[in-house]
Amino acid sequence: MPPSISPVVVRALRAVQGDGVPVYSFFLHGSDITKVADISRIARDDAEGLRGFQRKEIREHVNSILEFLNSGPVLFPNAIILALSQEIEFRQSRGPAPGGLIEAAQSGTLTIPVHPEGQRAAWIVDGQQRSLALAKAKNSRFPVPVVGFVSPDIGTQREQFILVNKAKPLPTRLINELLPEIGSVLPRDLAPRRQPSELCNLLNRDPSSPFYHLIRRESDSERDKAVVIDTALVEAIKRNLRPPLGALSQFSGSRSADTDGMYRSLVMYWAAVRDTFPHAWGRKPTESRLMHSAGIRAMGALMDPIMLRAETSTTVEEEVRRSLSRIAPYCHWTEGSWEELGWRWNEIQSTTPHISRLSDYLVRLDRDLARPHR
Image 1 (cartoon, helix red, strand yellow):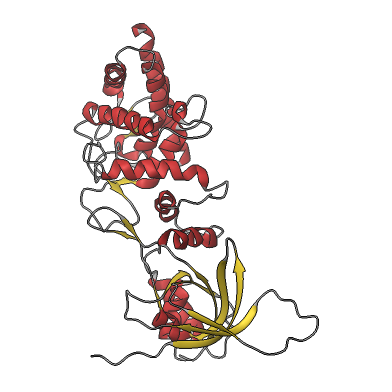
Image 2 (spheres, rainbow, N blue to C red):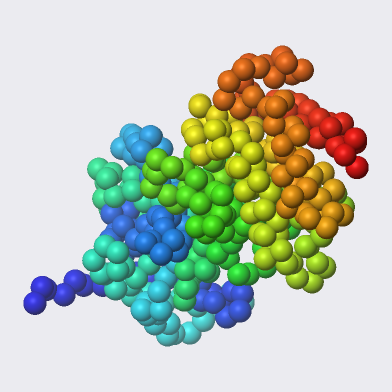
């Protein structure tokens, strides 16, 4: 049998927050952080389930922190935040307390087991790059402040990861993909992003979806088929959800949302888009501006008037397809020029002015062409 590895024992303060969640404050040597804690990088397993929550390692950022740490005597008070498993053990110190002591926390010793990588008793919630740099620093005994909270599940870890990093330049795509996996009440600015991202997940994983495995998410390994950036589709769906004229707003109840209804409408519309422009569907954005962020956002904007008009018809899907077929001759996703816009097909860019002009043009075109058919 391999020799047992001694646990890490540190002096710590213990407080309680939230619904009885123990929170600990302590110091570790820089080299010990990655000894007791794993980095739970975001990825998907074979069953398309989301694993982890951390962004990929940013090598340049790690190297810049390492250069700072190796520059001489430095002050590094930024705390690493860890999620701790229930394996950890805290023993409160005994002895008389001084008069007037503020009992916000109890002092004692914290014992953290040391396990092989991938099975460790802690996970880094904030400070991934700092931890990697500290592990490589010349001074392996550099004392680093750590705050750890006991976390029974990955959902709590993801929730804290998003909330801790909310004010930092965390990649939008990473936050969007994690939001559907969090069951708790989210801050007001994050909550509206959960539903669109959940629908984006469904569109990417459902074999009957026109977007099946075509959407690039932060967790994906590089897939040759994935050509649509997820943020473009998420933004398009967010617009579709806006009341009163959003195509999906009718499914957003005051108490609960009809996600199935939203999803059916999305599949109906985008399947019709795919079938209307088969030569442009599923190709790289450099080959087809329909798959480009600007194309997805513009066609998403067009979904609102087309679906709202189609809902008044007895044959909803047929009306959607008729509407798209009317505008098809005026669209130039893979060749030619958009004459009214003054752009060649490949000059469309993912900028606000281009997205707005293309969206407005398609909506106006649809309105004008639909008039004789009412």
